[in-house]
Image (tube, rainbow, N blue to C red; front, side, top):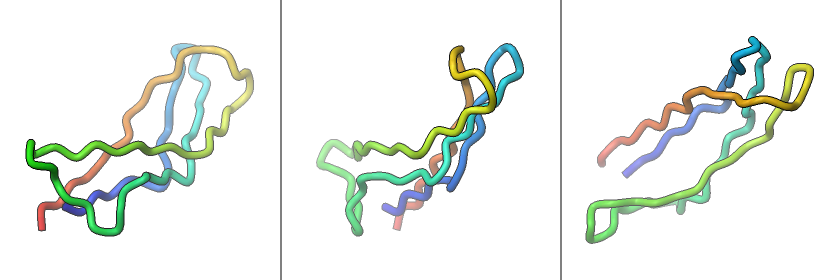
Length: 69
């Protein structure tokens, strides 16, 4: 399978503050394969940039695209 992650994701707080997750990377191998159970688990992360105050609950979506090759 091929996994594509965005370079950046925007998160928002109820107060309207914005946080960005930038430079998103994953620990996927060069050739990712589904396991015998049809699953593939991986971790990803990035640099968190906050706009203003750092406290609060932020929510957003990080679109993960999977292509079966």
